[in-house]
Image (cartoon, rainbow, N blue to C red; front, side, top):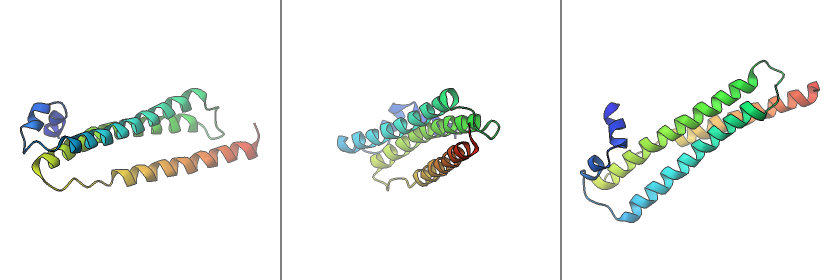
Length: 130
């Protein structure tokens, strides 16, 4: 694990592996990394907005649970982004198959489940009154 983390911050080590790829592949990998970072940042922003602006919900501390879940998911996405970027860049340089990941599907399920929970919370509040 520490070896993988060290690779995230050591571009010289990454460049010492394999052959330099066509720069377009590295740039495409970087764009994907930045898209994942934007997703993580959006989740963090949603968590902060939930904590600050969502009115208290009928179920005790539900607002805080939603906020913390969004913040943690945003952090996980950011960490996963850098790990995937480093593994993909290494595979490109070595001419290997790109690493497969279940993370996008898991993230989509988590976001979908969160949306369903929010819809339920909004409906409970609307039906239950102020």
